[in-house]
Each structure stands twice: as C-alpha cells, then as structure tokens.
Image (cartoon, rainbow, N blue to C red; front, top):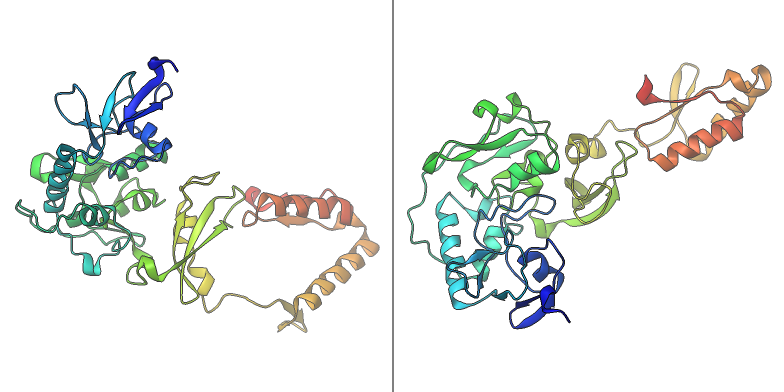
Length: 352
C-alpha cells in the first residue's frame, strides 16, 4: 500500500482520505479521542483542547479536530503528556463557572461531567470564576452563564448549521461570554428559538425551559418519531417519563434534519397532554356535538359525501389538506379527492 495515504495512530497504520482530520480518521477506525467543542457539520475550532494528541516531530500537542491527516504522520492519542494536558484543560474549564451537578438539568448527559469522571478530575487547582446570573425571561430557553465553558458549539450551531446568526462571542478576557447582537436577551434578539444551541450545548449552560425539573436523563425513555408539524419529515426523539413527553430533541444521525428542529418541533409538544385536547370524534346533531366512535364518524362522513355528490355533483365538494400531516398523507388526501370523489377541488391550508 502506498505510504502517501497512510497515517499511524497508536501504532496502527491507517489509510486516510483527502481532507480528513486526525480525529475523523480515528473515529472512522474506532479509535477513541475525547471531544468537547467539536460539532459535526461545522468547521473545527480546536477551542477546548480536549482532543489534543501527540504528533511525532511537532513542537506542541495538536488539536486533532482541526489538524489534517498527513502522509507518514505518527500520532499517539493517549500518551502521558496527552492525558496530563487533558486533565489540566478540564480543570481550567471547570474553574470557568459554577458547575453544581446535583440540580443541573444536564446531570447524566453532560460531556464535561463525563470527561471529568473519565480522567479522575476530583479537585480544581484554579480559582473559580464568580457566579453569573442566568437569563430566564423567555418561554423556551434558560441561559446559565455560570455553567458556560465557552466551547463555542452553540455559536457554530446557530451560525453554521441553522444559519440564523443570532449569537456570537462578546467581550474579552475574563468578561468573555456568548452574546446576541447588542448583548440583548434572547427574547429581544434575532433568535428564532429553534433550540439548535440547546441541543449543541455539552453542559447545562443552555437548557430547554419547559423540561426543567421534569426528569433526569436516565429516568426517561427515548422514542423516535416523525414531527407532525409539516411534511418535511424531521426525525425527533420524545423523552418520555411516566407516560408523559417532557422533552423533544432531534435525531442527530437521521435525515432529513440530522438533529435540527424548528421552534414548533422542539417546543410545541404541550398540546399532547392538554386537558382540552379532543380525543374522541364528535358529530353535530340538533345544533350540539355528541361523542362518537371512529367507525360512526367515518360512516357519517362517507354517507354525507355520497349524498352531496349524488345531489349536486362531485365538483360541489372541496377538500382542504393540512400542513400538520406528512407528505404521504397529503398524497393520499389528493388521491382520495381525485379518484374517490372525482373532483380536482383540492387545496392545501398553507395557501390560505
């Protein structure tokens, strides 16, 4: 095999593809390199320095997420020098804020917590930053600046994945933080509350407000389903506890959305358990509604349509389809209209 396409990682000679980074090669071959700031579908930044590796001949440790794989490169992912650096970087990240895991929403699903446990970081040698006040003035997202580690994943998720460009880095030095334009609250900014930043956050700095204190990650069952708000077909995970949906996240490894959701898909699930939600078909009789079975309701609709069609012709009937159903169901609706009823009077509520 040509040496021009080989890189050695942990004494293994591996073939790499043009443009791949050290991290991507390692991940493809199942070699573990921890990451914190790295975000798929976004340009690598090397901000957290957790993915550093030792490259033979290099003066310093190299951020594997940003370093391109080169022919003949010899890499060690877990040398003594590498592990020591990762532990110190974790200490620095932990000292940046107030990471009180007991009541943190990310407890059990926190990348920083996982890495601190993995590398046995029990004490922090550096002075902890003073606490900062959280922002809770909007309905959807709580921003806790005391837990932010400035990894930048939220900025990349907003600017590069969703391309909303609502947040960026602000200020300098110890005053650095993630800000909106003019350092305004989310509610008064360009944020559209898609929640991409919440899903990207590896700690508890950004939290879905409706799900706070509803359940820890290990208490929930994740059920994959398709979002019903439009016909795109976004894949989502329902986080269910005690037979109630307490949170929604996007499925990161499935199309068409690959983790992304809009504000409705991520936060508009409260109707599921609303006490006023209709759960039984209703038929109007003598000016009032009565409950009916699905069989009775469908039979009533079928008889009524046949009566109208026979008395006034098929073009006297119109069908309005819904944006709240899938493309497949909309296809069936128009097929029923044209082939079943015999009219082309079919439209979609998005045109109203």
